[in-house]
Length: 290
Image 1 (cartoon, one colour):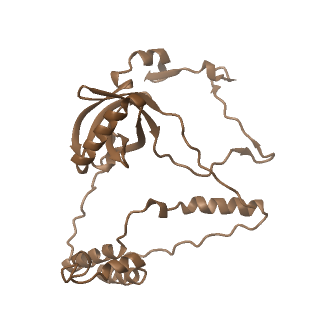
Image 2 (cartoon, rainbow, N blue to C red):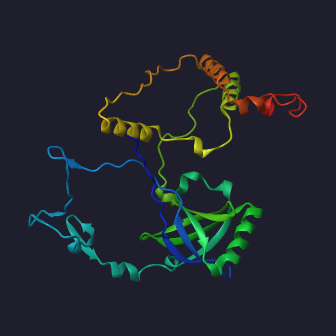
């Protein structure tokens, strides 16, 4: 038996409004650019294999509360709440709920990826196609990205707009106070030998390749699919091979050299071809001056 797993496609836009750039305004829509996917399980009662229901229970009256009787409350003191109605939230939405204004332009390399949260495709409405194309081209040629603000999902985001494949991508960003700091994070207080650094560079070069997201797969999801198919066919689930217990590295240089030897032996044909380019093209040295 073969089971086919499909990934749902989000066709509806998650936001619509205007992007403003100086005195230029263009109607645009946002569509989800990426989301996690995978096998999901239902919660069953073990004895009869029937799906269980999730209910909201009022602990005071000990009754099931209907969704229509549930409201949002903010706890301002222990066990004391004020009720917030949807209409009240609507009243205080900032202008960025419908208008996304570009605040400034910065070099992409200046923005640390730690601030990135979610990705969206930004597409123009018919009336916005020309200014959208103009802004996209200008960003491509200038190597700048745009920083703007937008309100959606009951919060205002700082966003990062960048050209991508002829269109424009939007990435919501965390605020500075949301990016956690970990005490003690940074360069360890150790002294490295020049020879160790040199071999580490060689190891990096041995593993260097072109970025191709298609070659990376979720092996755990693949194993889950096989597990389900095996159980449906009445087979025995086989355990996958587990990694050996790793011991602390005693001789760093020896471990680097051994790793390099292994990588050189497994080098991909394309990478090996790059290393064998004519000496004249590489200035008489190996790839990247190695």
